[in-house]
Image (cartoon, rainbow, N blue to C red; front, top):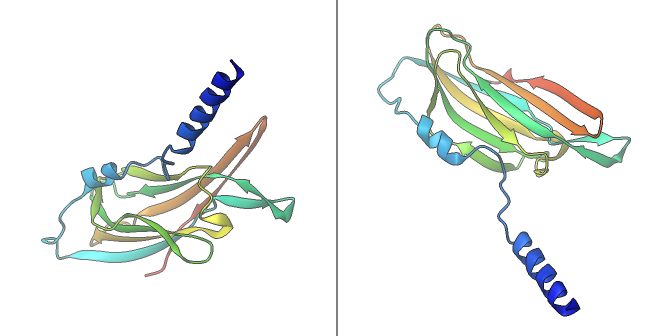
Length: 169
């Protein structure tokens, strides 16, 4: 009887270890639903923004880290015009590209927001991860707003803070 229980336990662990880890709660198919052809729109202004994101922060000392859920909030601040996001690249602490969420134009309708979620268990980015967003807007339209929201809860303790993007081009 003990052998059967042990066998079932080993099989359960083997199946659990083979599950594919989802790297983000944003399904890549959602970006494809937003894809748009902007090749005929010739009077768009180009911009590039940098956003710091923290998937981990130091706690107590440099030898202990606390994992965070990070949200990159991508917002169209115009109440009249659609804007276009061209690319979203996620980098780790050392500047290596971890993943590209999309590298084709997607649209954000007036006042619309979409998010990229970095799960608390996804610590590849480390303490200095960041995004670069490339975008285009119709002339005279406000530029998009990119914010980072980091949070975590353990027991009765909660931690949250925000970051704001800086335009770099």
